[in-house]
Length: 532
Image (spheres, helix red, strand yellow):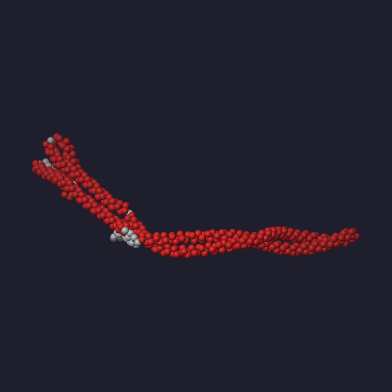
């Protein structure tokens, strides 16, 4: 069991062996890469610093030498100017060159001499050089003409020139000192970088070794419980467990081993119980086999009796099946008659509907006749009125209108008879309309009755169909029952034979029970070898 599970190591313990080993190698690789990168960076920095220091030293030494050379050259040019006035132009050109080179040398010294001391020396040299140039400018303008002034000027010249020589020597010394200081600093930086790299390398090695040993130790502790369980399994001890809780390959292997042993322990316990149960069952089987033999002989006798009764039942069911089939034929005849009656009722419904439509049209025609009679009545009334007017006009005409009056009277009588006839027609049409309405109502009632008859016929037909289906199902059931009774008789005969064979095999069963008892004893001896 791995101790101290918790925190980062608990998570690390659950990783795979590949991850653990790769982690240790990765850490060592990262440390080596960091140390190597730092070493390379340090060497590059040292090289850069050394190159910069060398560049500065060369620049300082070169500028210092240029400064010294041009100071001496300038002094020689001043002397030559006094001795060779005819070469004044050439000498002054050389002096101008010396001045520009001295200025350039001072600029280079100011840019490359580090430290306050070096900068002060450069500033002093610039100041002395400026004072020297001012003095030379005064001499060249003729400011010293008397012997005393010439002597004073010479003394001043020597003084200023001496300062420049001293400045040149100081700068030369400072340049040499700066070069030595740069070399010493480079050595110190190299030593410091070497120490730093060695320290980091030692730390990396220690961390890598620690991590490797920690990983190896935790893997070893995780594996330690497995041999203990395997040794116990070899001697039949199923009570041991590995106690491993990590989730790597070793942990999963140990967990699988623990589960396998636990399942084996359960199987052994179950096998021990089953062996005991098997022994008891073998004993009971021995005692039961004798009882089974006796029961089989009795069952054989009863099976013969049942087979005879099943034959009688089968014959009775066949008679009932024949009667049921005859009843089914009668129901089919009823169904056919009911269907024909239903068709007749449907036709009667259609005829009644057609009659109803015809009578309805008769009522509409009588209504139209009444309308025509009204028109005729109106014409008769107007004719009567015209005849009355004609009679009046004939009376006014006297003798000349007598013949016209006779005709007018005849027309008036005819109009009155027409009016009476139209009234009689109206009464008869009204009677026809009344009778037509009664006929329509009667036909509607007849249609309703016929429809009810049709519905009843349909209900009867449906019931007959259902009864037909029921009768057919009953016939099929009775036929199946008759067949089943025959099968039962045959089966009972087979049972009788089987019981006789069972009686014969009871002896074999008793022998098998004895063998089971022996096997149970052997299983109990095998289980006793294990500790669980």
